[in-house]
Length: 301
Length: 293
Image (cartoon, rainbow over the protein chains, first blue to last red):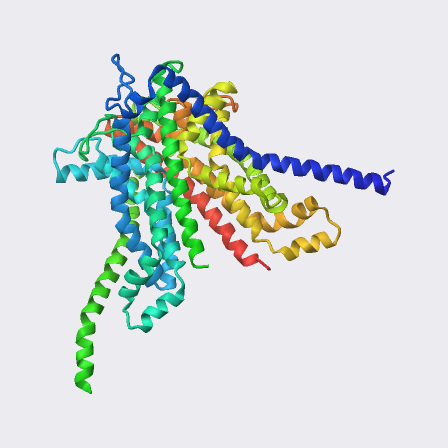
């Protein structure tokens, strides 16, 4: 026997329980962030009790796995920024031109084919890009410059450029399309050609979106792991030589994870310290990039 | 009169020529991405398709390249992705339902949204460090399928949440109001009206998120998934390897014969991704056709 009052009370209880469960699902994302910060911070603090933070941030020798250990992270940062910077320099003109073509020139039917085709590039697993860099691009580079090393920064940069190209193109395309029609029509009415409208009215109007595209692409390139772990080598050094082997922060974490470094020692802790630096670097760039994205969305409303 | 027109045309010509050159340059840049994609696919297929046969699919890895196969990697990938789906799907949809249907519009909700967007931008290898410290060590799961699947679930969770939120938001309010007007509670409305209507969109997003997880390598290397496994996994607590790690392992060896095995494994990996993406596209097309609102 269920009286209406009892029925209502049970129903209310069940609704409250479901509400709580759903809230817990959403809270998992907060717990993930907390988990990342706690884990990285805990290990990093322990690491800095053995190695002065100044040596870590300003030292130019990185040999934690050797008998004479040095813990200067700058060679890894140098390798990371070298590859990410080159990849962005290659991807930027390609991405901007693609975005301008898709947004201003391509007829809708061509756009409907080209845009998904470009986005396929984003769905290729990065280990496949690594294969392509090491076994296709590097042999080509060797034919052009015979002293290219087997592992080199250039092949990783070139392939990484095409990995970040879809991200760059899609953010730039969004921001170009956010420029209102009225601005284009005003320029056409003054006698501008389509080229002049595109480069002198639409592109400047979308500047914050273009900046966002660059920043978020660099951040993606900095965090990318497999291409550099496969193709760029394991030699941390302060060099800008694109044809020789370097090492990035991410490739170092892979190297230690695969090796037989004892998990309790100081040498293993380095991957958390390097991970913390990587996390802070990408977080700062993502926050900055998102700020620019919000700006181009808001400015024309 | 005609002289004036000629004059104007001659001044316009260089401007149009410049525009035309730019148009072709932009078209070429756009096509370059497609050309590189095609080159990559053709290169991998030429290198690897010849090695794909039944023995390749059913053999364990070996020191001898001609006998090495992907049995352990294939099974490991299926096990890991099944458990990843088991964790990520309910958690992601639950979080999306909370944020779209329940959450009051205040600072905590906004914080959740910003936090999810930021998590989507965290490099995947950082999730590997989290998984290593949390699941492998603290929970004592070791280098097991379960530890890998939990790590992957956290990695794809932001993607599942974002796509599910979009699918739920696309359900028109009139359906919700209809359910509420008939006396449904909030959960009855969500369960019987909103979720069925949003399901194709939610599934499409979930499949795309899982296809991301299938191709991920770095976080699993970081938690210590092995590269050499010569047995079939029997339980979620077993050691495991996955296709991308097997590929990475073969590429890292110096012998070209192993590189061909790596290319063959890439062909299988890409074929799996192609099937999953086709299902997602099929669902999206059905969704667009059956949308009544």
